[in-house]
Image (cartoon, one colour):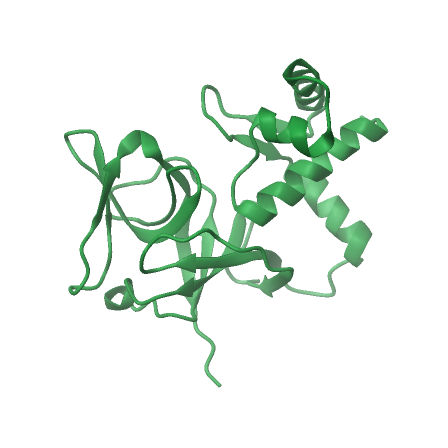
Length: 211
């Protein structure tokens, strides 16, 4: 179904914000970014876009708006032209492997034809050495699959406190805490309340470039 000009602005804002930050915006951020009059107006646009199949939301989860892979692919082809070969994924920024830091947007792409099979994958470049015992070094690229739920022990991209991201192994504690475990014996784990951690995805592959 066709989009109205205003609906296209909403979808494009969602794509740009998510690629820049690694997570989707809140209704308040959508309203501010597009200068919409009220949250009710935002809700009306989001609902209409869901009904048209351009968006989907996970029930009862914050920042869970996802733009359909079909729209992303169509826009990429419109802007960049058809791919001549291979699969490219957006390089969204740099991810800390030491203390948590905020990811920084980078207008680049990486080709992962053997790994990236869906629009739910993206790449991050590692900064820091907290995962060296898992053979993930500073400067490596990790290929990440968006996943709100992961198994204990998986290497994840975790959004901590709604603003900072880090790369660690994920463990749920029995007391409701989450342990983000580095793979470096010289470093301590990060212990945070479970509700302050939002999972951005699990690591699928690591790419190291040698000069």
